[in-house]
Image (tube, rainbow, N blue to C red; front, top):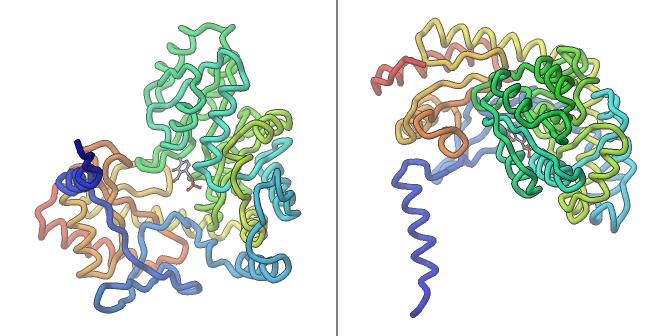
Length: 405
Ligand code: PLP
């Protein structure tokens, strides 16, 4: 019998379309120096839009020091790194950035990966293989990259309820002290924007003799006196065994990393396929990241304006009875609860008001909790924010959407 490959692919596509979660992305050109304005390339014409869903939270992707750092390195050493570090060597920029990141997180050593996703996958899958009998205690809301790393490592996994210290304690106590274990969690959870109780998790880790692994992807650059994340802000850096971060969000570029004790980093460097078998980051981008990390170590203005914008916008949305999911972070989720309606809202925002927010649906969030995810930037003005709230309010009325969060 002939195998019909095409119909299997078409079936997969049509089922995702029927659920209303077929993914389309706006085709945009960001305007450096004028962000969050961007040009939208429609099929027929172009128009200026305001971006409200960028994870370049501080606008560092257009910071002049960063751009100049990239440009200078680009013309000094060329475009690509030339291969994996095992085959083609380490560029000096990589060495310098790893030193900067170790200082930032107060750790002995750091290691760069091509993305935050790869960093999590590589570090967690490798740790599982390095430590015999390791049990991974994983927060139920952990990111897909951590879940992939845990799955690929094939260690035993115990999932604890999200940010639930009672459940974590119960699961730790069931394992007992003599079993090697690592608690794996995030600081800022990117879809609800809630923050983990880091100190209390570290207390439990001490009590039950467990290692700790924290993903600070949505916090580095944004929190702490030097941008070292929530762990820096809450004075917990020394209590975390492995800190994972990204250069793609608060730092405005691309790439991921881990920071930890030298021998942990050395072992992951030596064993992780996700490090060994892929070309390292382009040196010019690493040079840009050095500028970004160094800048945010001492400049607080970007953080301060961004957080002030977040407070203003959250307050304004709440007082207009729009369904904000409340949290203590810079992420503003606005609940809609239906994939088709969410897409309709984002289409209308773009068409009627030139406002770009990407719809968030399953599997990024659970079904029934589809939402908008709004991320104010230091360069959004009060006018931009007032216009956003007014436009959302009009749409909520027009479409008779629920105002219950
Ligand atoms: N960890 C978390 C919690 C994330 O939300 C993401 C991406 O959004 C990643 C890791 C992956 O980071 P990157 O975008 O650098 O691959």
